[in-house]
Image 1 (spheres, helix red, strand yellow):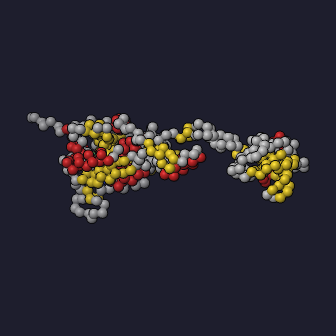
Image 2 (cartoon, protein in one colour; image 1 turned 120 degrees about the vertical axis):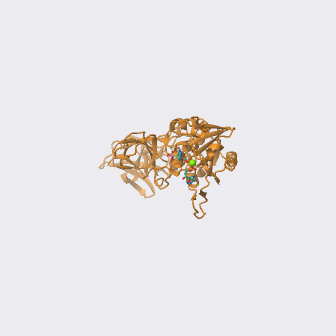
Image 3 (cartoon, protein in one colour; image 1 turned 90 degrees about the vertical axis):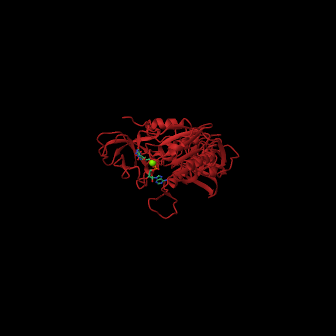
Length: 420
Ligand SMILES: Nc1nc2c(c(=O)[nH]1)N[C@H]1C(S)=C(S)[C@@H](COP(=O)(O)OP(=O)(O)OC[C@H]3O[C@@H](n4cnc5c(N)ncnc54)[C@H](O)[C@@H]3O)O[C@H]1N2
Ligand code: MOO
Ligand SMILES: [Mg+2]
């Protein structure tokens, strides 16, 4: 008996997820740099390392309200025989001292003030007794010895001149904003926001505002992806949804590529009669990188290049679309924003409940982590079927379940990745 040759769409070579990640990332070049005002840099990624242009603090800074003195002057001070120093100057923050402190002298100084030459310690106000008007004393009494360096932050003790404080690719958040400001970065070099196109395919798809109709569902993948793309500091370009029609989908892919740095599609990548992305990506000017991955969910996740532009065709199943985004799309968005190692860091955790399913492929299940009695534990958010959306809600990690003949028991160690 003669068999028809197997159609192309059924003949697929499955890569390991890490091989698929590597193939994709090899095609990505960081985007050009733009300069934005510091206050607009929040949630963007640095395109250049932040290098300290000067030490910080830039002057010897008092850590207390009190008196700048010479420690040697009060070495013999006791409660019974306090030592009296002459107050030669008063130094609020922001005022440069006009004179050095000589033997037997002190300067009244405020927190953040510049410690004058000659002084090597600041004694807090509460440990002193002044003579004269409260805010303008002429003499101050110190009743115990102090160590040199007391309450003085030396030049550069926090940040050395020329130190690399933050690497390129770092997300600008609160701490980064503070450092950038302290170092005088009024404008910040950030990666241009990646433009990420989203195109959904499916005859069954309704717009979110449309009423339900028989056999139809609303397009939930598009807003889900848009939310994650925004979270990643990129700009979603909404190309909308098309029915399973090769020409219409192909035209939107072309339009998307002309407007985006990276194009995502959802649905139509499996072996079904209407899996239209398979045909679109078979066009002669498109080079397929892979169309099958040895994992669940999202085994038919596909990636391709047109010229040097990347198309990642995610599975239509919402759970698979979500996992595919985290494994394959987010690293691309990060690399476009100059992140050197864009992959999530794995951690080890104890499985909070058993996972009884027999498992032919590696699985990435949507999970939640928590610390219980000092141990990091992870739980599936619920059923990990690829078609489910409800178990995406609240997921803060992906739990790896290796291929197993017998499932896993509660308490076994697993690898997981934080979703952030
Ligand atoms: N005979 C086989 N059938 C299937 C296989 C297989 O190997 N052989 N693989 C299954 C696996 S695994 C996956 S994953 C899915 C992949 O499906 P597609 O990527 O082709 O996606 P569609 O067929 O278009 O849709 C699948 C599912 O998802 C729903 N969907 C699609 N788009 C959206 C959207 N924007 N928002 C919400 N939901 C969406 C769609 O209605 C379907 O229910 O194929 C399996 N089949
Ligand atoms: O590879 Mo699929 O996402 O398991 O249904
Ligand atoms: Mg399909």
